[in-house]
Image (cartoon, rainbow, N blue to C red; front, side):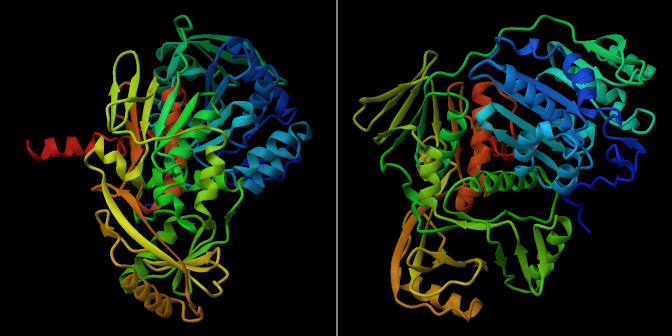
Length: 577
């Protein structure tokens, strides 16, 4: 059996009125006296909050032991009350045994003063999938990146420098792995100069371990019945902040471009969408689409990354119009695929269920592509123009048209024009496709089998063909093929006259994974999304926006690495010796 893709859940004992206890560790999640005040004393005050972020544009706080999320809520509340206008706070935490949404809600019920924030956190509560999960609260300039994994493994995947740390694992005597020297060394490695640490424990090996990791450690008066606690500070002076990016030009106004505009806009960046065809052109202009996860029978970096991307997109779209989380039924093509689907379901949480000969994707859904693109782009400035070349220099970038005339100048350029980005990265290739809308009544939820069938404006959508190159092929053979496939897999659905036809071009890569990363100091790319652009673009855009702004990145380091644009050239060089 293949390794599971989900973490073991927390095992809670609720027998005490004061709150949950971890049965496996025989320890409490927070003080029985007053958990919220303990958090404020042991972590917020110990790390000199809010003083450490006064006058700053960006701050990052790390944590070992997310638990119920109480520390996150207390930090968030203080940040909202005291942050500078336009400032951004990244909270990066690690949890090996995630609580369910229902268990967290039960814990949060003890603090009605935090209800507004806890409700918002619960609305984005991530699944138990291993890896990094990004939760963004743009109204408050606040993001949580929650790593589900062992502490040492998760710390190796974090790409950020912390200005403060909350060390809040269970007691060292009961959870030694959380306080090991390799873990504390990683805390030091990920600390910015002047970083502060707060923790409840004064265990001798923790004091010595923090000192060995480079921290100056001191005992301080404890909270409640605990006589003492620890504070620590990393050497060095707090350095100058990374300057805010200037104007960012995004070439392409489909789902990749709109997702980038959204991720940059919530950070206060000046963005411009540049596209020859206007908003929601190309593959983003289909009559309807399905949001489904890419599923593989393995725990690998790209699998974690694409599953996290799907869940991020699902949560983002749930707050928009024209997205319906109605579930999707995926049918196997043969017995071998049926066995593979059953194995995948065993590796996943209850969002993927193998039952009655089909794979039930319970949190997948259907959407109207152009509507989501418009909503994500919002009021972003738009420029309808074709870009033939980008000249990037030390001072900035010039976007030139086919006649060599300057269309726009920007500090940073992101290539997000789908197959059009092949002009900048030749490893991207076009893949054409067609779909059709027929008169008729669709089933209560979409069905996929290689092709797919779902409700759409005007009737029932059936799609889609995949043809290498930019030519989608003749329409009539595709229509006949759609009818035959629908009759074989959804015999209860009657397809009437063709009400609408659509053809478009997707961007593909040799390994069928997206491309997201830097091409140079001022050039980035987000492309190669294939047929899952709406599932993958929002989180990859969040990743690039964080890089551009100097924020904590959204993906595990290994997951980000397998999506970098230079991977194809590196493979060619290895093959050539």
